[in-house]
Length: 137
Image (tube, rainbow, N blue to C red; front, top):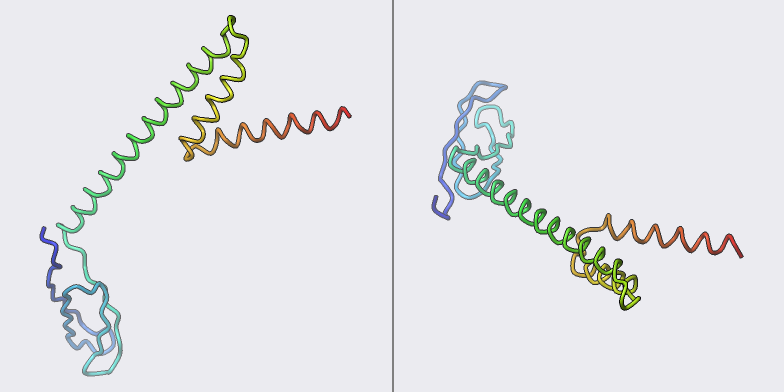
């Protein structure tokens, strides 16, 4: 399909007087026409033709493919984070595995801002911990 819009002519009968009304579309998607016989106005939308529908479906398929790839990348990244955190938490020799695990998680959250459920979970867990501390005092 070329980038320039299709020129299209549509005709229909006026619902009030049955006069034939013709509309010619070029680039505009909507047109307002007046019946020459009874002076009633009609707003007519440009019909979508098969080639335009096919292009829309191709664009939608491409969008869904990109979205699925991003989702898979996010899952892979999250899995890598979980493995890294487990490794850091099981360090026995340096004694700072928890600190390193928290740093790793914060870094991952900064890189992957589009994963709010995990960030919200961590924030709600921190709020619960701070409330518990306040209740004990």
